[in-house]
Image (tube, rainbow, N blue to C red):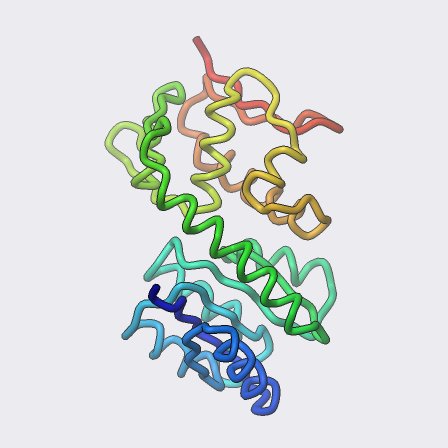
Length: 231
């Protein structure tokens, strides 16, 4: 079985070396970069299963690097490592497409567990072929497999998380999508940071759907979300 390939971008040489050695001992092929510029150069030339990015780095910070990675690949999972614990930083991380966010200091075992959960979701998504893949949302066409939302010939490319969440909303159209169900289905955990991440994605999807006045994405207080599609 081919090893999962990890891009690790960490400017602390001690932590970077320790993480690289640990991940390789756990059978992950790991490439280490020490700044965002070097990380981008490595990503643009190779294929990775997951990216682990420090936020505070010289030359180019992790948020900027994540945006550049997302411009190349909408699907590759991204995990941020940061010394900051402010909620605003977590929200910014999720807004640029992060899959998870770990605050230093952390245990390597915790990082490994989170990585495995993310990679398992990625693998499960790629193996799904028999489920419904295309949806009509008012005047929109949503192709889940291609991660495309289209209206009047205008296409919006979606990230993996956006596609997964929009699919759940479509499957529950005109009914309530339970918040905790969505979190556990897509994030595997209904903790605070994952909840804030989902709120960011809901806001993005709501913006994407503004082209049809018969479509509304509502927050249902204390319950979840409702995708209202005009008849």
